[in-house]
Every structure is written in C-alpha cells, then in structure tokens.
Image 1: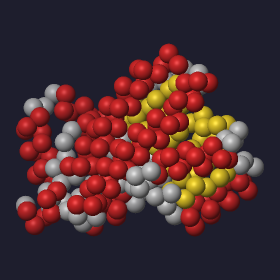
Image 2 (image 1 turned 30 degrees about the horizontal axis):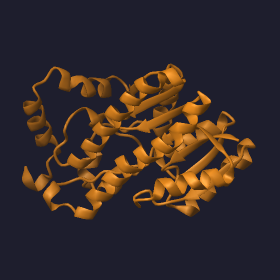
Image 3 (image 1 turned 90 degrees about the vertical axis):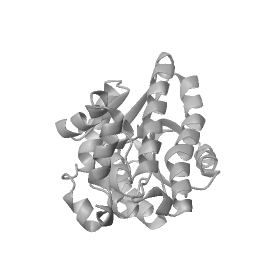
Length: 262
C-alpha cells in the first residue's frame, strides 16, 4: 500500500501535513512520541476521509529510532511514496549555559534521525523510480543565529543535505524538497524555552496550513527548496548573500540576545 509517512505528526506543521494529505485521499503513517495525540488524530482522519492511518509511537532522539520506524513500516507491508521529515526542536539561550543533553538530543533528532530515515526510505524509492521526500528546515538555515546556535546549524545541514539529494536523485524520478518556514503557529517557542515576551514580540507566525500548502506546491513544481511565509521571510533568507557575514551575525545577536545581557 502506498502512503505518506510523517514524523512529528502530533501537532504543528506535521499535523497540518496529515490533515491536508488525508483530504487528498492519501493513506498515512503518523510518527511521534505522543501516543494519545497520534491515535486521536488517526481516528479523526480515518473517520472523516475513509483512508487508512497507522500510528508508530517512537522517540526519534534514540539512536536506533529510524531503524525501528523502518522495520515497523516493513511489518505493515506498506510502501512509502512520500516521506516527510518534520520532527525537530530548538533551544534558546547562551550555548555554554544550556543543558548539554538537550543540545545532543537536538542534533540526534534534527540531523541524525532525518538522515537515517532518508537513507532507509530513499533506496526503495530509487528502485521504484518514484517517490518524494520533504525535509523541514527553517529560514534559520540561511545564517548563523547566536542564542539559537545549534538549532540554526542543524537546519543549515538539512537545507544543504536536501538540495544535494535533490540533484542526485532527479534522474531516479525521486523529488527531494527542503521547506524553510519562518515563525509558524506551533509549539516551537515553548519547546525552545523562549521568554514569553520575546516570543510575543516576533513577527506574526504563519499558519501551519499555509506552510503545508506552499510546500506541496513547491514539491509539485519539483523545486529543491522553498521559503514559506511571504516576502518578509524571503528577504531574510537572502540577506546573507549581500551583507557581510560578521556584521550580520553581530546584528542578529543584538536582536536575539537574552534580555539580561542587553
């Protein structure tokens, strides 16, 4: 059975992908840590859209998590036509003062799990000469971000990795897309432990549904990447092309630094 597999599917962009693809009649495999949220979403989508939805409860920060997910899919006997690597999180603050294990878990989830899942599901797509992969990066991928240093670095990896795979796999008729949203309606700020005042002062978040709409349009157009959320995000993502990097990082730091350091 052909289906889409979505990580981080219990909320935010991942949930919005699930809802949109269900409306299009695609069968789904939903992956996240929260069993209750996944099962509730799965039942809702099955009832409303008459599709098949399976749930895989998995913490992707664990070293062998991607293999566990891949083996669970093989047990189901499903074929993944669309892989959406959406799961990820950030962490705000001075790097040296933030919890060490949280930084390592971020790298494990944002990079290691994404690469592993991509590697394991890409091979069958190449064999079939069909399939698509969406890797969710961020506009943070385009420049270093002091006080979000590890997060921005992981997203830069995702962007570069995805664009390279886009070129490698075009001849195999496999599409790879990096999606680069700006601030989006999700639990990102809470998970990253942004101060409430800081999060509230940022630009108005884009609806997750709009990010998904733009992502699927870019995938249909076989683009290598897409910056979602309008002209403002596009300008921010292109600023590093024309602004000296050292000056840009210094300027960003003044905006991003914790209030106690200002």
